[in-house]
Length: 633
Image (cartoon, rainbow, N blue to C red; front, side, top):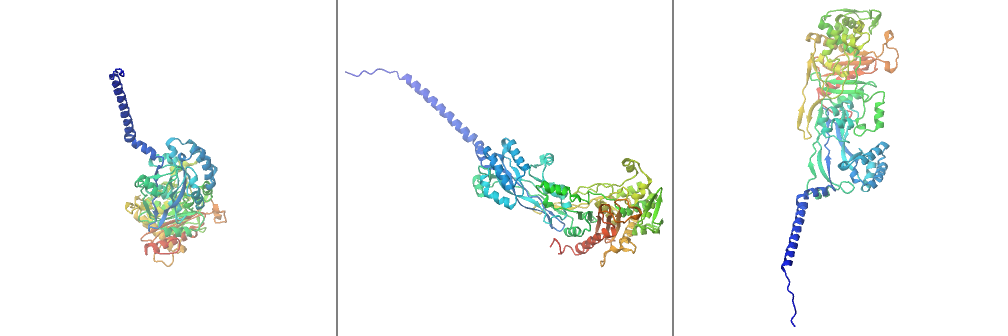
């Protein structure tokens, strides 16, 4: 019997087959499209996200420019340093307490440092967690050895080799060079657009501060490969992973600065300074460039550069001798008799006296109900301005000051730079005080009184000058009337020794005194040192082929009256001054020294001036830099 086969309508199934095939094809197209987006269009984004798990972008530190003296002796350098950083992103929450405990154990963190790390970890969010925090700068060798042994087990902590500022001759020229320190919140706010960040160092005072923009350099950018704990992998592995040079932007070292000071002259002045406190400054009278700048006592900038320990800072700022204070530019003193040449020039300029005028000194001058005394009790007799300067007669200048008046003295003194900033580019300074009648009207309860002129005429009263102002004033007498702006940077070079800038002398103005009167006063100042009876005669350099001109000064700190010179406590003793130049006819160097509470200028300041001048002229001008004892070969 034949098998019965039913008839089926296949057209219905063909339609379903084509629908399923269409749906499968559409799904395949969508899948391929998605794969295209993921692998082609967004591939770079996801590759970057993947690499960010093990590739870190870091700043490549720029070497700070170095500082040299005029002969190329290195005064400020860079040395290797190891700093400890903590990055929150590489430290799990449950591992933070262990990390903090180990850091405290290995580094001996203070409570403040512990709080700073904890606060940074808790408050940083998002991408900021990848920014490293400086935990400790300049780790010691013992601490470094401990960290290197344990670093692989401490999450988020890394030791980075960097550089620190170093001053090879320690306290030498410390007030001039200055020091660097970590940026504070005020620095960051002020310099936020210049690339500074927490942990950076910046020049705080002196040349380091004034020339920060030249010394700093430009930081670069480098890629580093890190492990899961945020610790840097070896250089070879870094190059393999990156497939090339990890440096994206090369750091550029800061420029090198060459100063006008001579380090050996600076060393001599510091070693031979005769007192506990005071200042010495030497300048080239033909250019205004600084040859030496000494403030006593000094400090070692190595001890406070970089990360400053609070205990060290307190010790310095609480020291009664104020070692951080730059007495050359930031301290003004009564100049005493070193001011008499300027009173004399005012009197000559106004016609109150001339070269032949003779005034009588009996040892004192009565004015109103007050007696103004001369340092020589028996007086100097009838003398001219030449002898009055040579022998430093007080009464002569009392009388000359009364004749010419305070306003004329002030006007002449202002033209020599007293009472105003010198414009010195590398150190903060005070303007000093050169009063006139209007000054007394606005600064005293009594207003101007005639007796003020008498005291001010001999550099007492309210006249105050900085050692740098006095040196520049004497330089103007020595060079024939040109007042220069003091400078200390001679040239700037890039790290590859390409000249960036060379500095020329800067003239502020010409003083009011005439050539004739300047010559008259200069001859008298030469007599101070070279004429018998001169107050500096017995301090003149012996066995040399040049002569020195200058002026002694003994400035009272407290009123002493007729019994001046009695035994007084240190803080009440007179300041000793001497300012002078040499050679007399062709000035090469001017030196001003103030020895606080050092007594008489002839004994407490003049010997150092003579020694500095002799050393400079014999060793530096005539023979050039040569070998000698001391710090420098």
